[in-house]
Image (cartoon, rainbow over all chains, first blue to last red; front, side, top):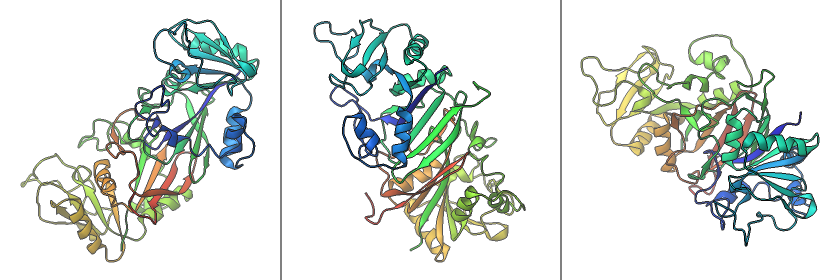
Length: 219
Length: 219
């Protein structure tokens, strides 16, 4: 069966976004600092339609995280726009413009129903109101044998972690402090819900720590 | 000048001790899980007067953290005993018995004056009521050219970090969640106060991330 996996950048003090996230500042104050290690990489540039860039161990980690992904799940907060019901006259269509970098079906968890949104380059946003298990089922079906990426944000990742549905998790630990913001591991309790460390890739500006479901399954 | 440095074990969710610390359970609930990686190591066993044990990369990290240390600073909470004034009839003499594993002068930060306590094996506890800078000055003098170890706990480490007085910090990141407890980076703000990552040692059950003061000094 296709795996559910995610990679997320996290500060040393556990934040995956800075404080005061908004439509104008989706990563929160200082949140951009979590992603600076990725900007020069060729894998990141390629994802955004740019050529060139650095090729190093972090690049390999990003390429691996993007490989064999057939569908993505994300929370409403990550899809963006103002919270609450969709604005029918001027609906929010995501942060990513006409040709989003996914190029596969994306499932958005929301409490507010909305018809699917088909954009250029193979990205279709489907809005799922029936909860995380329904979204995962739909995403797996749409992935056509490939894996499903859990796009984020932290709240959505927490729900899947708590339910024991995550097969692989990679923390890209950035050696900075944000001091405040969105915490990945709040409300997760005192265990990793079946995940065990399987690999570490250390570089001077980010440390990638990969976890996978242990053979014994859910803890 | 002698450096002030510390190594501390921290869970993936940022805790350096579990919740509900007490005289009976000084590491808090689940806090022992932070240190399990160290117990089999020869360096840990040697520190407690035992022979044998494993020799691996973590062992080297521990040996390095203990080498060239001439004095230790710790907080009252780490020294232990019930908070408040010392019990004159039955004074608390630390967790470590008659022959503590330090074998050098130890300076305990406290609000309650008390004469120095000389134990076997070269360990003398001196109680400092004049604050963190006074303790550091005394410890540096006592260290005789060697470095000063910041023994902990988290609250004491935070005070020295905030003051920009830490020269080296090594986080032994343990891939577990504790869910609650004592947080190392609470109230530290959004920067590492002059420290930059200088080395990572990754093993399957702990990842050591070392920081040192950058040449440009305090940030």
